[in-house]
Length: 173
Image (cartoon, rainbow, N blue to C red; front, side, top):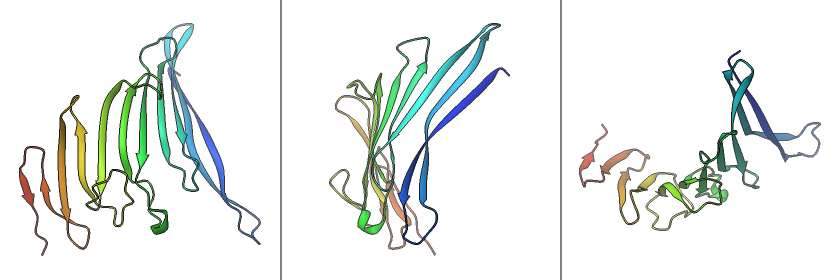
């Protein structure tokens, strides 16, 4: 074997209905360690770890890519925040996706993307239909690339405005 992967999982009880013998459980991937053959007597390892929020609907909030464990400087972390609407049962609508260099507490941002739902003007506002109507990607310290989408009453995209201002319309028959 020249390569192997070990997966670790996090398990949480999400419900224990009265009168039932079993419980409902959620299981999510918490770590992956990959070993690669490097010399006849050794392997190199790299690892990624995922953390989840404490809600009844666990969502991945950070994934730390530790990189090669025998080297430093190749670590990065992907951080996600969500626009949830628990009253409507709407979860896992990413609002912010950010990647930072180093540990998850780093302030050195490598990439940043934002998604607004259902014509909301506030980032992270609770969605009502779940239509991504505005998406922005940060290009540098002051510039953003933005795409907007208009949806019809059935949730189908009918107009998309790209970052250059070009408009594409779609009609459904």
